[in-house]
Image 1 (cartoon, helix red, strand yellow):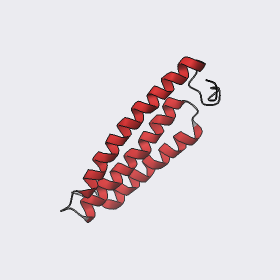
Image 2 (cartoon, helix red, strand yellow):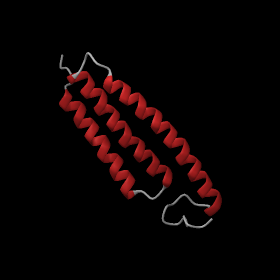
Image 3 (tube, helix red, strand yellow):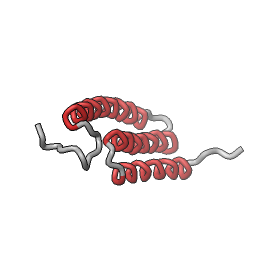
Length: 104
């Protein structure tokens, strides 16, 4: 039976990272951009866990960093959704190009 190695995990993480970057740069919907940022953060989490497992199996540093990033990502998502809701109430759109971000 083949064991999944570090190279395969890093390949999946790289693909996930570039999908997130592509989604962030090409989409104008703020919710989609937020999901793309979450994909980028999850690819970083996969890297932390993979390097922790394959290089430092006796330590839990990568796991602690991953838990910290998940906590920060949850707070970032809550704040971003609050901003998106506020923007939608003011401009009736969540498209970045159509919304007037300087209007108060």
